[in-house]
Length: 458
Ligand SMILES: Cc1cc2nc3c(=O)[nH]c(=O)nc-3n(C[C@H](O)[C@H](O)[C@H](O)COP(=O)(O)OP(=O)(O)OC[C@H]3O[C@@H](n4cnc5c(N)ncnc54)[C@H](O)[C@@H]3O)c2cc1C
Image (cartoon, rainbow, N blue to C red; front, side, top):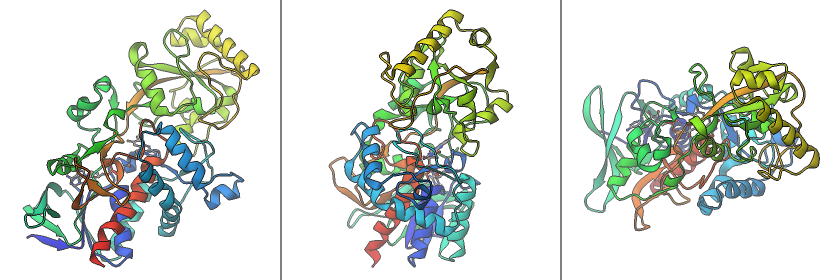
């Protein structure tokens, strides 16, 4: 029962369905393979934050953002280790993708927030499961997209005559078969955070971390492409995200009180980092602390400045769930979390002094997050502590691609017929991470990759 189509898409997360819908809207047929019994991968588990700049929502909220500022922030947060041409590709196609999502019916939340790596509020917030299901439904409704569930791509099929990737071998209910794509294959199979062995190869320091992500995300696409000689990038920058509660299993999201003014202290009651930096870098700093854990310390004013519509900023919900530890005084709080009382009080006093003086000589913190927001004192009871560790939510590294999303081999040549988008690729993030740029890159690069591949059929 071999099958043929215009484009084979491997993986039914955000990247896969943006690719499929774009291809269908452009008049092409797609077969999308999803190996799990449900589509959605990490996309549906995510916090639903997408990074766009210069949108109508930002203008209406009086936020002065621009594609140039987005470009500069992405480069800066990635410590210039990211691929400039790929960052340009993200920036050039992001507003169009925002419009594409809106046109498909995706609803963005009313508030805009600033988070990791952002100089201005540019988190555009969605219900991620609703978004993926909607895009899937829209794609299938075109009549041009076939989704094969519980069907795993196994290997890439190459035409021996010209070494072009022309399809995949797959296994599903009907056994083993081949799906061929006239324009080739687009890998949107996600990262590999559910493959402990593979993560260990690149980031052994995270061996004991918590791993959260789509169950099927074990690196299939990465390895299929590597078999053909594909190059990789950003592998050295796998990092955990700071702010995951170490023991709570009901809520898998991180909580970023630090980006509204909290400080992070270790088990000794001492600060250890500039809390405004990317939460991936905070993750590295946290994992190096005793017991690989910390507490975010905040007061009532900071608690109230959270945003319950954005999962990573819904502080009050954490309080209601009993995850946030509350006390009327810092002395009581220190006793509850078992850190030395005198040290915690001295740490908070000293920090408040730094806020007043506008100078943090210890860690150089100047803003709430990245270049955004003025620091606030921690002095209004009640006080709170949020236990936090670093959890690996994704690998954010992988196949090297060019700015048309062609997969590049170890000698710098494009592998003909092979494209990749979403978390399976490296190159966009570099050394750290801007909130919203991973869902952003799945949506943006999914569309760009589909168009790039299908250009061959015109
Ligand atoms: C808890 C959490 C919170 C997050 N929050 C955010 C956020 O707020 N903002 C943000 O930008 N990013 C966030 N991320 C990261 C983001 O969700 C992912 O990077 C992004 O969704 C990846 O999309 P994708 O389409 O590339 O992959 P996925 O959505 O993971 O989809 C990949 C799909 O491919 C399938 N697949 C794998 N191998 C095969 C195969 N061999 N054959 C067929 N199918 C296969 C998988 O089963 C899966 O369904 C978060 C991640 C997590 C886990």
